[in-house]
Length: 124
Image 1: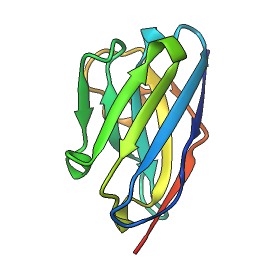
Image 2: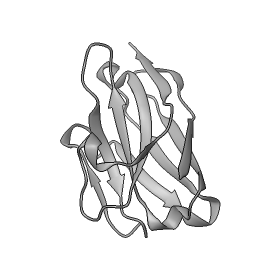
Image 3: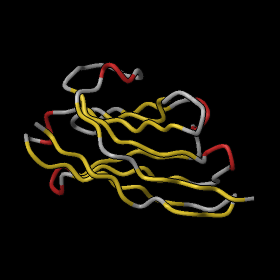
């Protein structure tokens, strides 16, 4: 079992920045690839960014490329999502997730463990 806890969400003005954290506990964090997803009101959960278990490979949804950066620190069992140039449409609950599958996993069903989410609200 892996337990995931997100933090760092909040209210920010458009154009601003936030850094989300995902703290993991339980089974060895470094054995899992990780991802960030988000869900806005009335919309489906969508992939945002992913990182391989060793941090050597990252992949992003097109709508965040150049604005968001995913990273991880295995020594701290923590993953991050640095978000910059935030837009109103980035408003959502952001979830971190872990998967034992290899590859660029972008669908929710590929992930085995999920956090409870953290709210990000971007105001104009």
